Image (cartoon, rainbow, N blue to C red; front, side, top):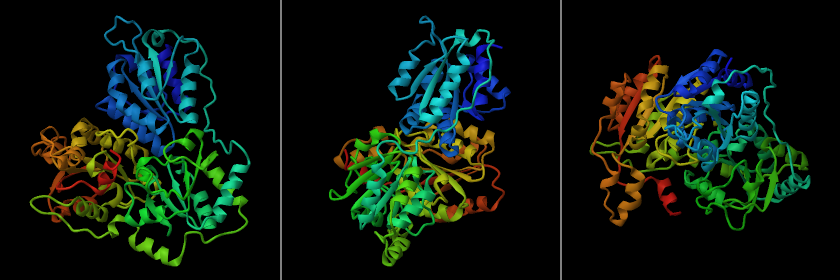
Length: 543
């Protein structure tokens, strides 16, 4: 057995069940070893897509995403996806061949690349400790929630391996509470005294709905999420949906009125707080997080409680003597039911002249597509419409790879999410810019037979730049494009497609939804483009 085979077997033994990638000479043997040990290999058409698929897969399964790429250009192609994963603290391992000879045309400083984007670089240095290093990479990814680059030097990969493959599979380590015992008690005191408490749950709270729901009931708190945790409180009468730029007018009003804001596994960044304006200067801010560094970033905390969200919420509930009405009242419950979703906010339909209003498009899709869905959204001016007008059943129904705000990750995100949750209909929401960037993965959708609905919001431009610079009279030739027939492009890949310019065109979507749903459908929507989206207007306030 050579080292490459031993590493592949070791990673499979650690728990790798699915690996994404593009295979070249430098990762050929380790990838085949993973497959031989029982892992499923999903071939992407571009390494950037492979990294993003693995990122989304890890987010939606709670496990470790694994990517396999060639040395040098295979890794550089994957860097945007790796950066997104590193910024999001997604448990991820990138297996990359490495050319260590400086005269090789494939030689680059791969460890420096990883460090530059916030990933953890690791390397096999000898045949003797190769399996232990691979197992440690898996542990770091899983337990520390880090994106890891495991460099596999070609000479080490080819060396004979005569050691043992016996190892203990890493387990998730949950830090119940660190710091002082008085912090949960102080949070309990603040909650008992608050008249208008609001919880904002983030990525770190995705597994803590039951505990936060119970604590909210005890304290009368209203319940909101950051965008990445959308759906966490779905079905509860006090669910405000998403805080920040995506917030409805009612949600923004109620969060601004809070006298206590508790961020659960949520950094309260500029997107979640509208550049801090959603948090009243008179409000007390508490952050509960595994990483104490979060307490001083973005909106600083008046009280930081280090620890696991579910465990801290349980401890705080035990500290309370009784319940409180808090922010909740029958009148407010009626308002949330009537005004708490963007679909309930009146608007003037601007469809016409061969284009459909994106709000009308998205509410139509929301009505037609199966409710058990998983929505993945690319970046761009359009992104608020699918994020807020397409409902999801729970936090497992929304995959949002936006920490790096890169355009072009949406289709690969949807593929990874679809493979993680095959029980749901995957919906990929893309702008035309992102659709063209990720076009190569249309073949992957077809090859995998995914029953995916791909919606392209086409304004024939990089819309964010148009609406950012256009009002100042700047020339826009560099960010606008002639019409392109994306429906024809999809059909060329074997994907049925429909062009939508008015609501009646959605009948083709209804027909697909009534059918066996045994393959994909692309919806090429020519959307109105006279003005920027509401969330973009909020974003521009920070520029």
